[in-house]
Image (cartoon, rainbow, N blue to C red; front, side, top):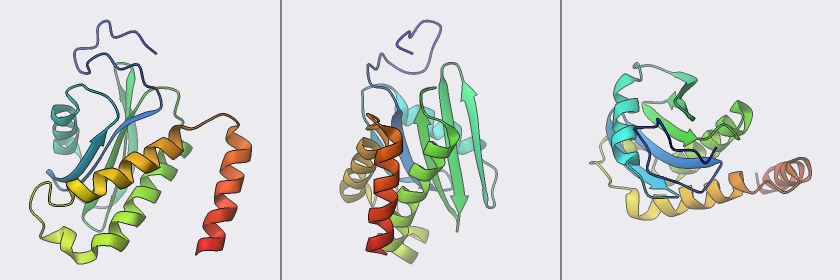
Length: 153
């Protein structure tokens, strides 16, 4: 999906997979990372404004992009991806990001000001995104990763 025609949203992006991730409390973005230039900040805000309060998870598409989010404990984890990412992979990425965020910040997230966690946490997002977007042999990699995660727990 390299065509950017008819897509009023995102500047040309030659990356594929998960392109942007944000963590917010309602519409207050606490941390955000995008792996390429583009107006992701406006898009995140538009999407966040539409997410209903309460717990939930959802995926929807707009143009050639997909928006996936989970809403848990008052925290929304949002990812923007292209069509190469399936829902299972997207939600697994969101879970990983949310878990790390929760462990790192806990209750601080409920009172933090906008972008309070951005400097530190955007690095974590970047790292998770890189892992999620590395797809040489998805089956082997994910099963290895799962085993590693189980050992760590």
